[in-house]
Amino acid sequence: MRILTFQAREFGWKAFSKTLASAPEAGEAGEAHTVEECVVAFLHIERQDQEAEQRLRVFKKTLKHLKWLANKRDFKNVVLHSFTHLGGENAEADFAHAFMLELCERLQSTNYSVWITPFGYFSEWNISVYGESLAKVWKEI
Image (cartoon, rainbow, N blue to C red):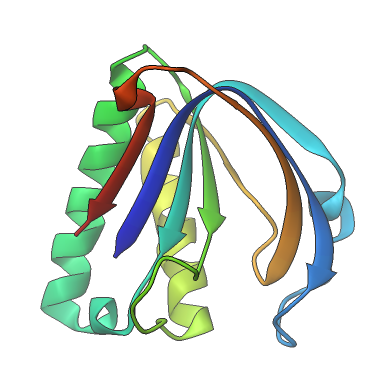
């Protein structure tokens, strides 16, 4: 797992083009959305993350990292974006999507509002990130 996270004043996205043939039609999820005061996580879920023990470890550490970063600014909003451009071998698309959905559910169960950008699509973004170093964190798990 490789993660690039931001503490954002605002993050906006809109589906641009479908990149994964098996991806569902974007529908309403493909419309423009904006979230304020949020952690934005660009997630690159890797092939080795699919192994059972590795998956559990990576899931726990990713969840902990997102909560830690959100709590630094008392954020309750999180945006998850699949971003397979951070290096390494990609996990299978179905696995990566299920992983993100589970992250979403777990965060929601602890009172976070969570959005997932359309999976299997390139998206347009608008982002306004806070200036300090902690507002931009790269992590390899």
